[in-house]
Image (cartoon, rainbow, N blue to C red):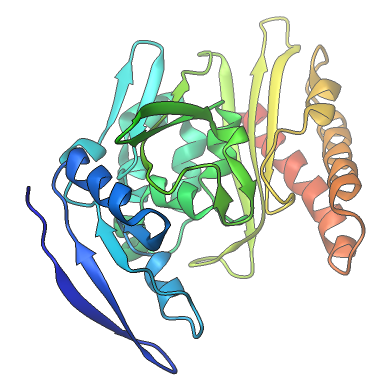
Length: 301
């Protein structure tokens, strides 16, 4: 069993922190370590979230950090019949360049293109974006719109979970401490369906999402909407499809006015869940406009 153990210090603002660092090469090694340390371990892959967290004053230091980036089975994008599978260590740059995703799920490519800088996209992984569970995560709304499932593995076996049911609250998932996210899979959308992802940040690049919308629109040959999926980001405590807005679209002919109506419904549902707060005056009209723009982009495609 190959394990590299080193004592590592991270210089925080107020203290020096000590932990053990492991670099397993196989699933069995990684799951054995997680079984040993449990909640006292943290998994690292790209490190674009964890390293920042560890440097914060007062952050809890894990007893062990387990680097899974050397596990080759966790990389790659593939098709399995009617499914597309993204392994957990797939980077945002991998997604952006993938011909498979450009063909079957272009909204994922659009979302990946908005994440950080080229350096961050080269290191950050789709698995890390999911497991960090920040409400501003850009990959999650498109994946929920695609009806994605996640596969998790531990020494006790493998299980799957719907991504839409995987999040408990911001920064908390239903993954057990001894589990590793190994892949994300979703059914290929119908060939006639189109998709889009729009995002609003404080600047045009290297920007954290303030609000975002992932949308999929399937319009039949009779020019009526057969199916619609709308998933806002940074709008709810956890991500969800807004079916009340989707139902407004189904069976109707696409139009700017119809899309605007769906956007207003999303804003209405958002307020019913979060209540009115200091940011509502801004978010209410903005999320409505973003939904309209996302649906218009689908229709334009």
